[in-house]
Length: 504
Ligand SMILES: Cc1cc2nc3c(=O)[nH]c(=O)nc-3n(C[C@H](O)[C@H](O)[C@H](O)COP(=O)(O)OP(=O)(O)OC[C@H]3O[C@@H](n4cnc5c(N)ncnc54)[C@H](O)[C@@H]3O)c2cc1C
Image 1 (tube, rainbow, N blue to C red):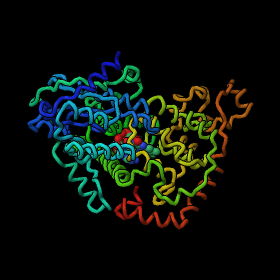
Image 2 (image 1 turned 135 degrees about the horizontal axis):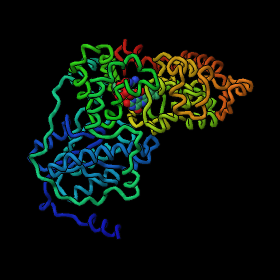
Image 3 (image 1 turned 45 degrees about the vertical axis):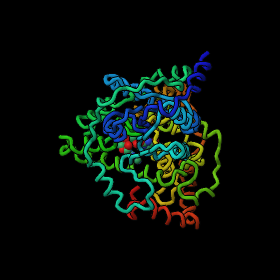
Image 4 (image 1 turned 60 degrees about the vertical axis):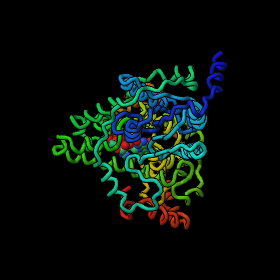
């Protein structure tokens, strides 16, 4: 019955003369109602407009995608719709292939302009955009894509990039309004299917809540109090959960713009008092865009090594090690605690993310391609432009950065000395005393008898010192490869100001 109704709606085409001329605001990774240029320009036009978000099944099936991302998106839109309801407006969600949605909308309306932000996404998102461009040409629709967060389309080098970024950050914040136009009455034949809706409706309590209000709450609590310890605790797996900005998820899905975050922190009355910490987070906002800019220019990094010379490298790729890593069952307490924590909460600090990659790619000698999508799925703040480039930096396949091999025991002793984070996420180790918490495999049978302990936790399958030694030789050795050297020159020219290479 449901299908028959849908078919009726789809087949009903309005004659050209009767179609209302409208605009469309197409939301992508910009799920907010303020500081939103496409919305502003749609509102200022004399035509009424539809606000749309498309859950494209092709994107849903892509291996980087996970339900937790969709949940965050859905709840961000619910939050937008709660606010828009006051103005009798809403963001319509379509669950259908993007080109089908636009073709259908063209049957109902005469579309004048689609307003959206540029998306610096995966190859798949580019392919979808290309189809929309074709559709726009065929239907004589104007598609205006605005620059997002200072990321520039079509550049060949980084000349003036930093300067332009700062100019972009100092632009006034857009104050969007929604009073000019009346709602368009439209029945959505591609509304979210019930089975997905049920999944999306529930939202795990351990995930950061979605929406503009929460984004601002996190930002405010950072500048008001949490941020004073930003630099001190940035690498601590436990303390950083409070002292870090925790705005990545809001930036990744666009609940706030980079400019809003930048100006809020820079202009805050506590800036002078906590200059070191606040400057620390401000520079990272630029890194955020710097990495996405790389991906904007070369989105192939999702599939291939940043430095093509590393495609030749052979790895052991032990499937059991990779499985253990994914499950948080390696026997290395800080590694397992990090993976389990990430699974439950969707967030980890930078150092723990880097350590996870380091263990997979260096100690376990695995190709980065076996782990990148696993973490992409788990990060609630998954942003392809940062993710694949950062993942590869830690995996040592860029050829331009220092190869960092994080010793997971040393990290544990330095950053979780009392094992608080470890015990929170590995209940098997709850009773293990501090002197063994970082290396429980060192406990002898006598130790366990004395401590009255029965340990139900795996032993690591590798010797971390030997594995790191071998990895170091391998990683640095390959730097001498002629393709790696040639690629290095190309990458530095394309993606860095010459002195930027060392820092990033
Ligand atoms: C393997 C790996 C994968 C990563 N994947 C992602 C990802 O998918 N999405 C994502 O937002 N970050 C990613 N990061 C970067 C970083 O770990 C997170 O941005 C940070 O932990 C988010 O927490 P926060 O908002 O509290 O950051 P803060 O330290 O408070 O920083 C503020 C903002 O600056 C940006 N930022 C911070 N550190 C970096 C960095 N090293 N590189 C680029 N931007 C940065 C983020 O937008 C962040 O929200 C990844 C890092 C690694 C090592």
